[in-house]
Length: 225
Length: 230
Image 1 (tube, rainbow over the protein chains, first blue to last red):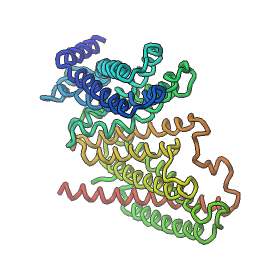
Image 2 (image 1 turned 120 degrees about the vertical axis):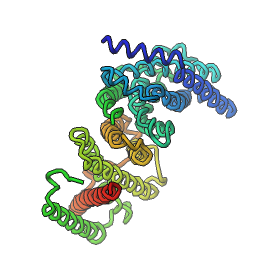
Image 3 (image 1 turned 90 degrees about the vertical axis):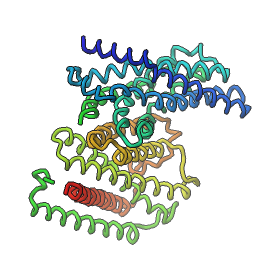
Image 4 (image 1 turned 45 degrees about the horizontal axis):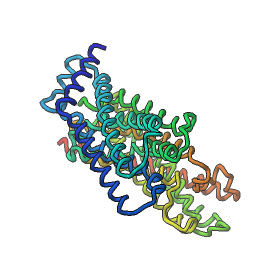
C-alpha cells in the first residue's frame, strides 16, 4: 500500500507539474467541440435533430481528443530508463499500471467535462438535467478506455510510428464501449431514465472488468523485454 | 531454430505436413464438387446463394485462426519459445485474410438480397470491427518496437481474442428488428440434405485450408528468421 501511495504521488506530481495529458486533452476537447459545433451550426439543423446527434458527436470528439492526449502518459517513464529504475525499486508492474490508470482517469475526466461543457453551450443542448446519469455512463466508458489505453501506450512508444500507432490499436478495441456508451447516452438525451438492468450497462461493466483484469495481468509483459 | 518437442522429430513432421496437405486438397476438391455440381439452385436467390458455403466456412476459419492466436500468445508467455510467436504472427495474418474474404463474400451476396453492399447491421459491424482489430494486430507486428514486439503482439492478441466473444454478445443485445443477417442454421433453413452436406464439407475444407496456410506461413517465417540470424 505504501508503494502504491508513493506511485500515485509520483504520477500525480508528474501530471500536475507537466500537465501534458490534462492540457492536451482539454485543449483537444475544446477544439473538437468547437469544430463539431461549427459544422452542425452551419448545417441549420433543428434543435431536436441536434439533441439526437449530440451523443454521437460527443463520443467521437472525446475518443479523438483522449487518444491523442493519453499517448503522452508514459513520456517521462520511458526517458533515461526511468521505468526500469522504477521496476528495480521494487514497485510491481501491477501497481504501476493501477497508479497510471487512476491518474489518467482523472485527466481524461477533466477533458470530458470540458468537452461536454463546450458542446452543450455551443449547441444549446441542456445537460444539467441528465448530469448524474451522464456522469455514470461517462465513468463506465472512461474506465474501459483508460484501462486499454494504459496497456497500449507503452506498445506505441517504442514503435516506428510513435504515438500514431496508438489510435490504430486503441480505436477498434474501443468500438463496443463506444457503442454501448452511445446507446445509453442517446436514450437519456431522449428523456428516457437510465435503466440499470439494461444489457448495455452490463456490457459496459463487463468490458471494464475484463479490460482492467487483462491490463493488470499483461502490463508486466508489455513493459519488460 | 528448435521446434517444440511434438514437432521436433523430422519424420513425424513430414508425415504431419503430407497428411495436412492431402486432406486439405481432397476436402477442397470435394467441397467444390458439392457446391458447384451437386447442390441444386436455391429457390429464391438462385446461383448467388452458393457463396453461402464459402462465407460461413471462412467465418468459422477466422474464429479458428483467432483461437490459435490466443493459445499461441498464452504459450508464448508461459515458455517464451520463438515458435509460439511465429505461430501467432502467422495465425493473425491468416485470420485477417479469412476475415476479409468473409466481408467480401458478404458484400457480393448483399446486392442480391438487400440491394446494397453493406448495411449497418450488427453482425456485419461486428465483423468489420474484427477486421480492424486484426489489421491493427498485423500493423503492430510491422511497425512495433523491435525489441519487445513478440510480447506486445502476444498481449494484443490476448486482448483482441478476449474482446471478440464480448463483441459477439453485444450483437445479440440489439433489438431483433435491427438484425437482418440470416440465421440459417438456427432457423433450420437448410431443408435439402445436400445443402447441409455441402455446408459441412466446405466448412471442413476451409478450416483445413486455414491450418495449411498458417503452417506454410509459419515455415516461411521460421526460414526468414533463420536467414536473419546467419
